[in-house]
Length: 314
Image (tube, rainbow, N blue to C red):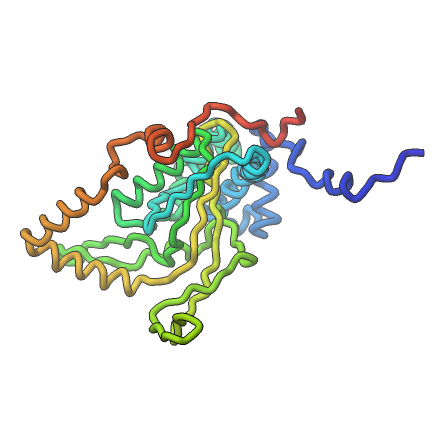
């Protein structure tokens, strides 16, 4: 008679180890169909091109999640020095193609879609552009995250999940017109809400001095809800985390843009601001590689070590 399992042994069965991975075209097609029917609750008679994109995104995401969990387990066990990269802008762009390339799934996904009569380029074009930035700074921050994951650095990004992206541009009567980029209107298959980590954030208010210390009163409180987004390294099974906090501020963004436009019309003041910004960069200038940042500034050593894949039983 076999010995009953202890509670600890039972819990060890709750593991990402040994879960089957998406290994070939047949598996991809099967999982694509599963997500189309059971996640999106659609069939081929009513599914749109956007539905097919979401089905593919969820299929690729399945192969990402196991590596994401294993990476965090690996960091917990090895306890390496962490890097926390904070930025007001993360111009992440589109995730599907980048994820397929980094996981080595691009050719298999392309063949699977071809066999299903779908065009990969058309599905990729359905993804909303996560333009959570205003250009260079935001794109640089996003590239930092990609590079740190590919270098095996235990890195975490922290930014703001703006309700609206950079903006949509239209030309009306020969003039540029900016419209709100409602990039979340159809949802985002790559993010995971973490309501259990919701925190109150205080704005405005004033301070009062009391015998027991200074108190911050009459504040406006916003509940910040975090959303985690996976950031895969290039074929090393490492998936780091980008954590966004929720804020909606398109109106404030427009006001800020108006201030920038006014300043730009004054060449002397604009040049002064540019010089101040460049001079204030110090060590954190864009002429260093991520490996140089790691060694010279953060004090961590990049690694080319690959952690085991989720379906690796050894």
